[in-house]
Image 1 (tube, helix red, strand yellow):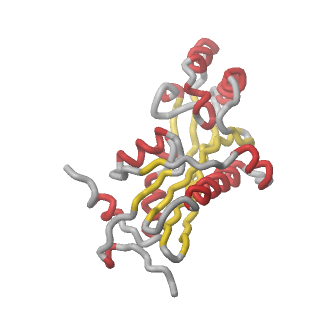
Image 2: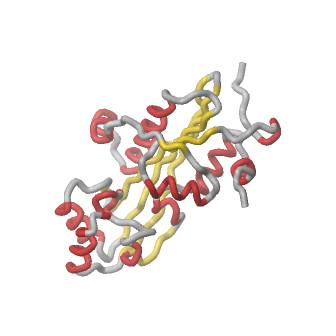
Length: 219
């Protein structure tokens, strides 16, 4: 028997939505569009998982980790729940960059990206948990990011704030790193943490119209 899908034609309520990420930026992006998620952080050891999987490209890493995080959290959830897993990776000159492990590495990366451009890839995995199992959708969103030339004092002061150590690629678009971004080509929200445009499409593929999200919003 095929699982019953949740859509407006069935007049069913929006399922509980769980974000499998500790990222404040991702949580805020969801809240901005009318979703108040429950946060459950996955127990995935990212370096170990990446080494075991043998992913070769930045896009494979981003989507692979997103899927693993979502799947890990899904095992703890009950039916009528939707889980969102994400992972972001910065690609520069063909190499993948996540969160830097030290201030020295952050400084090196910012020097490298100064005046150049790269791609911020975010993998998205959304699973609708029903009594019959989990129905999955996976999607990658990529945004090209162009950087201004950064001076050594600017790099040192930015790293000193601690922000570059907490984010993929060592910079932000929506916070202290914003003035260093010259331009972007693509979805800006994707650079912040996740693509809400991509989520809308994935929800629709699972039978959840965005009107169901908006119906939960109170004036």
